[in-house]
Length: 93
Image (cartoon, rainbow, N blue to C red):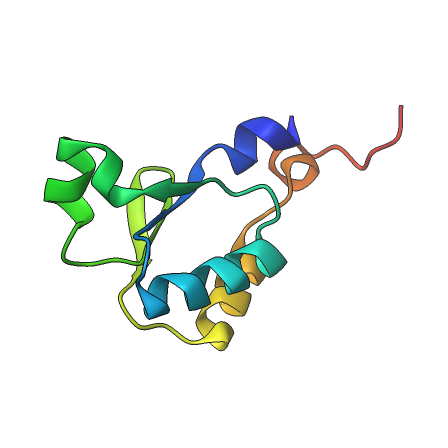
């Protein structure tokens, strides 16, 4: 179930963008497995996010964009519930 929850996360990034590289490092720590997508690989993505990268999207909504601090990413990570919390499962069978 964790893959389903994590698949709702995506970081839109651009090669050669120092803010994007910084965001990628933070997202790797706080959201392991979060896909990093090249905003220039798709015309629709480039039109939506191209001037705003890096852009962290959760559940289809932009939650962080442009310059953001590690504390912003950490707070977001703390606010995201685990799959077990979503379903009231304590992990016991």
